[in-house]
Amino acid sequence: MVDLVAVTLVAGGAVLLFFGAVLSVYGVGLLGAAVGGGIAYLLGPTSLPGVGIEGSAATAAAVPVGALVGVIGTYMLLSLVISAIGFVIGGYIGMVAVAPALGETGLVVYGIGVALGVGTGVLASFLSKTTMVVVTSFVGATLVSQTITADEFVTAKENLSPEPLLFDPVTPLVLGLFALGVLSQFGLFKLSYVTGLIARLPGARRLRDRGENQQS
Image (cartoon, rainbow, N blue to C red; front, side, top):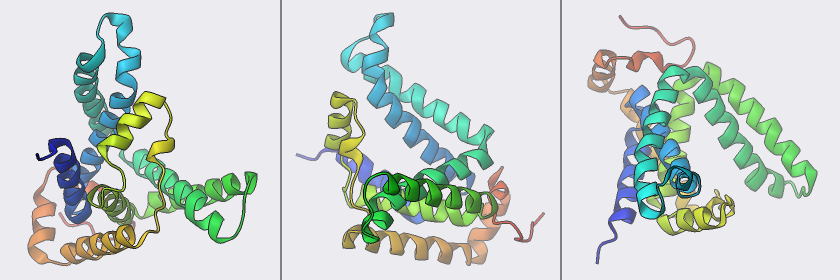
């Protein structure tokens, strides 16, 4: 039997992997919807019983609202959101990949994570498009490879802990998909018909690396 939830996650991941940044602010909105919906999925069943909504009904009510809030938030605070995304992804990679590679443990791990997160957050404010190519490729690779599945989300929700969502980001499959996504997305930006289409999409030109020519 086909697992529709798993198929949906993989399909959404594929869209992010290959087209996230090409869709410009729409890619940011999709990411915002995924983050907002995911947070609502984790917190809805524990926060809505107070208003008389419980169980699956709480989840069904919370996820669309969380997704909508995520989309609105990304559009209202686009630059801040991109920098925050850069900080989170950079900090995560710093803690789970860079620090272990350097043989560091304890509080030093958090220091490396914060330092790398701040650095990537600052870079993200100047390189919006590049940041979104990297971030959407990373998230897409995670979902397509099923490194994080619906079961992990369920476990995280039940335990109220992010631990089940943590994983090794340098596995060959994730790295391979990530590289494929980055190369594909940067390649699409070089195609004249794609750049022409993006130039006509409402709001799409807001997502650019600093110094790129603004087309009217």
